[in-house]
Amino acid sequence: MTRPTQGPDDAPVRVIAFENFGCGHCATFNESVLPVLLDKHVRPGTVQYLHADFMLSRSAENYPAGNAARAVYETAGNDAFWPFGRAMYQYRSGSLSLQTIEDIAEAAGGVGTAARTAAKNGGYAEALSADTELGAEWGVDRTPTVFVEEEYVNPFDNGDPDPDALVEAVEAKL
Image (cartoon, rainbow, N blue to C red):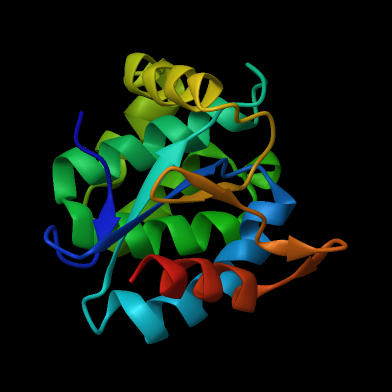
């Protein structure tokens, strides 16, 4: 399965994050930890960062956002997924209406109708389930859960964002 990525396919280190658009810690990770990783390793080309969905529950708040994000990725591409995801974390899916999802997707990639339809109808439920199953196989039980290669790295220190832990784990693999 293809998934949203940032960084070159041939980067020497891969980081995969299992995330959920309804998760407050995921929002914090995307605001405080991920930008440091992007600046230090993804943009220079030493890391490929991969997004994976991990649905903590089948709640009404989680699945529409995940389905919409997949629709943006599949219909508008990788470059549209990332601004869409950032905006979703700002709203956190529990407070999102279908109209808000459509507006965000339209601004991110011109695919508002596709995102709204997927959010409403669960068009990417199979892909979300596949990511969640992969995460469960890797021992994921909360979000965000981050792996550098296949090694778990905790991006929080006593509940506070800790970008240095992730950067150090990457540098140990280089």
